[in-house]
Amino acid sequence: MKQYYNVITAYSIMLFLIILVGVFQSWSIALSILNYCLISAVMTIGANLQWGYAGLINFGIMGYTALGGLAVVLISVAPVPEAWSAGGLGLIICLLIIVLMVLSIKLLSSKFKTLKNKTFIISSIIIIGIILIRFISAPAIENIESIDPAKTGFLGGLGLPVLLSWIVGGLFAAGVAFVVGKIALGLRADYLAIATLLIAEIIVSIIKHEDWLARGVKNVIGLKRPAPYEIDLQNTEWFINLVEKFNSTKLGLVNSISEKQKLLSQLVIDASSVYVKLCFTGLFLIVVVILLVLTQRALYSPWGRKMRAIRDNEISAGAMGKNVVKEHLLIFVLGSAIVGLAGAMMVTNDGLFTPGSYRPMRYTFVIWVMVIVGGTGNNFGAILGGFAVWFLWVQAAPISLFLISLFTSNLPETNELKIHLINSAPYFRFLIIGIGLLVIMRYRPQGILPEKIVKQ
Image (cartoon, rainbow, N blue to C red):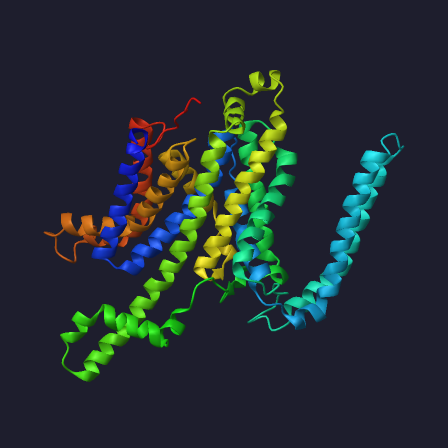
């Protein structure tokens, strides 16, 4: 129990802070923060798996998060029959051409190693394939995007349950990570970081500009979710009775029937938001606990010890017969799959897919700050970092506004310095996060909960 004392203390403090938000702001805001903390925790588990276990620098977290979000659209959104009729066949033909190109190149590379002019033949296949794809896809895409572009203008999805898209989001990210890993994992650490960041930018750019796929920057709204809608709860008798019973004391203080009914309606509206967010909290918490158990077991398994040996000294591990490249590829794929899962969870929580919002500052470097602050190589630390940094990221503006108002209370409302500080409050999050990171690096360089090697 003593070895988990720091973990229990740190998590208790975070839980206390979230409860304070619920008491002094609102429980809806507190649950929103908690849900995003849980999503961030899933992302940090994936990043920690790559960096903390294997020492791989992946600055492409943003791209895999976007792929997870794309999976929600492609799986849960209902198909658009008019768009499929207008250009679906053309895109299917293009997909078949791509598959034939890949199979042909692989066949030539493996079966005909001594074939003369092999490079010329492969180049010709690629050029002819690209020309064919361009010739067929251009009119098909134009026809699809012209179908009621204000509402649809894309193919839609499969209309399946949204929870299935979480699994598919992980698979999407894993598939792309496998291809990226095959190409980039042979690079030196700094070049690998640059390569993964650029590949993530390419992924996001494709999603933003291919409207036929997921409406691009027009966004997809009204996505399915695995929780009831607030409006449905507000019109459900059992929920209204539950709220009335729970707030019987408060309602009993109101004498007027009309005022009592008005108060009850407001309480039902507030409670419906809290209830829905509690449903998401339960789902997200289940995912975090499952991932934590699996990653903890992996960390202290023979495989985990092997990965730490590779991380600490690749040359020695390779000399002992360990396949460093294969293990790096495996953990790169696993970590990216977890990040893709988190991306699907986030879009499901938001109820909309906005490709334009995927930026490195929020979806890559803030995640890295979370892992570093929490503790590299420690799953509990990575999750704590996700909680702590996201809490500060959200609450930095209210905290800054409170402190500014406190220290400038003696100044008149028209004072230019006071006005400037109040208007700049939203930007104090960068200052607070930066100062926090500097303090952690100075006094706790291994993170709040540093890695502990348990000998077995």
